Image 1 (cartoon, rainbow, N blue to C red):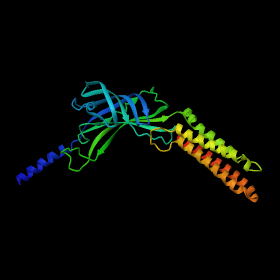
Image 2 (tube, one colour):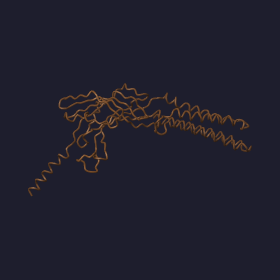
Image 3 (cartoon, rainbow, N blue to C red):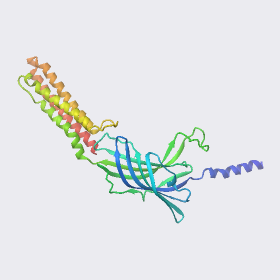
Image 4 (cartoon, rainbow, N blue to C red):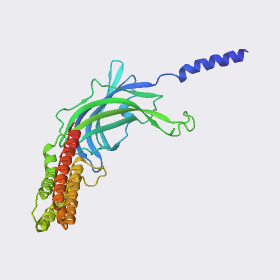
Length: 319
């Protein structure tokens, strides 16, 4: 009986130790430069100061910082200083960081740049970050090639890995969790001139195709060559423009500029189909009047659909 009581007492004293709260450090960052945003390798370069304020010198979170999405980093200017009962350490970080870019609304796209930092030694049961939101920020003079910084934030999340990394303290087959400090920067492209430069060939091709609907003569066959010639020139110019404005070396799907070119291409193909239909109907003199009405209806309706679709697409991208 005495043995059982002693065992129960020992187990009770061990439980609080097992449930002890993890150590923590207050961590923050100040971004001094952001440059080299490249959508092809999906990377961005960043320079920033990273600091931690810890209760003991041994914790020093900047010493164990792992830059999860870094392609390469350089650390310099390390320092540690005791301030009262806490230990303040900082380091200057320069690196290239992998990103996920969404260009579907290019060139009015909005991008999120994230820099993820984890503790390389302790999981979240032993150590966690606390975000120093009040002191974190960025240099407002940063200029990033057509982008403006619209939002900046730092936060702490828990990253779960489907492995214990062989840690004997974690049960076999269980996940492991790590505290992750995230620098989150939201960018918005501000490049109206670039949009006009890339989209105007498509709109010129649209106008050329639009004109073709109104090329008419009592003997339609006499203007058939001119009409097909205009539509062919429009198709050729749209294809060349698509190749020139495409975001090369990427796989980001269909951008806004691509949508405009594809819509123009479809508009022109409808014009080709309409012209072919009229030629087919022209052999029957009784159907020539209805063929002309069909030409007018198709010309007006497809033009309206094209203009409305463009306005909606651009409005969604800009908003």
